[in-house]
Length: 273
Image 1 (tube, rainbow, N blue to C red):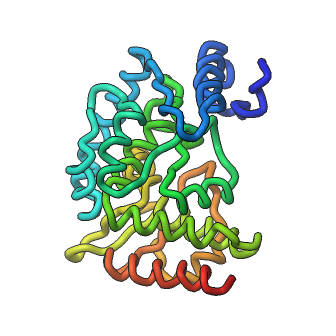
Image 2: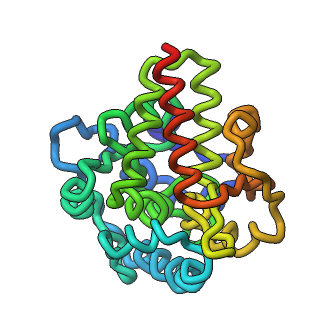
Image 3: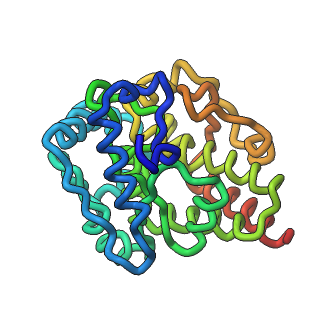
């Protein structure tokens, strides 16, 4: 592999591990992200027909689950950022709508970032996003965040002011957090903005990006995961496994209850510095 091997190294059980064309494509997209400098236009990725087909396959499977499980706030946000179902949108184009709505922008990342880097960028209205696509042989599964996860799960919510406020609050809390506090913050982020659920009108609804962007996860979590009450100190003490389906989902009584308690909890971490 080339000099970017450590950036885009794939585990042996990754669907694209034995596909040299896929690995070369990952390196190509990683190069574009690594060459990016803040203030430059976000790089445009010329997606292939196969990559657009993966995008269409995901939407064909997940739209119905969104109708059943997506929370009201996500449905409102999806009216602001109406994603094309047929072709993968460009971050550069989506940023026009997102920035006008909330001040946020999505910036390219070559791959997984450290929790500190990822969270602290949020304090500056910036969301670090991958631009590569999962392997075409597993269109409904990805072992890592890809552009489909970023757009379906996060881009939509970043165009919604209440979601943007929560993202920014995580960033503010992380800016000067010590390592112990940071660990709690990333766990709370994981179990809320990635895998959070609430009750709405007596039904279970989802607001976490990891659930909203995953056909497999969204289709099984209600029966296969342990649903626990939304207690933030307990959430901050609960480890998670990012490589597998989630076994625990924390459920708040409502969106308003989740949002108000989360903002208060994050604010306390800022004041404690």
